[in-house]
Length: 195
Image (cartoon, rainbow, N blue to C red; front, side, top):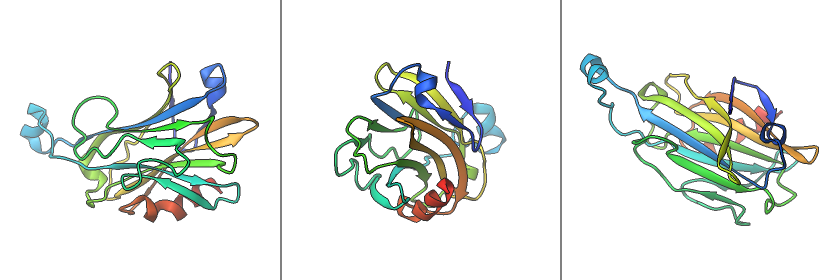
């Protein structure tokens, strides 16, 4: 059974999985908030919400190496792949996925920071049921989940990080809110979250 994490909680993915991991995926899901009394009663959504999952690759000095996002769906070395931009949040399950081949990831990459932002400027008052989750891509089992339930006027969140530790990987739920519209806007905040 997957762990549900709180802000600033860190787990060892290998201990959670019970074995070494070769690849993982980060899934991001969300729904448009239901608006008004009738909307809540009838279950109708509040329109389309375009959130963007991104992955910032950092070295041991916390210097950015690469960025995987809707404008670059794959890392330059090919070890990280983005599923593509979902512009609505409709449907069940993950709306966007970032898959990481841990065996192909260059040794210079020490940290991966996962972010979400609203390029269109829609804020998280209009989002509900948002979450990110880490899945063992080898057997498709969910290892951990972090609910991004904080509603507000922010347009972005530094969600979580994956860091090399003692030959394995630690996953940390971060949950820092911001007003960046693209992953580029969130790089300095991502670095601060790891300090």
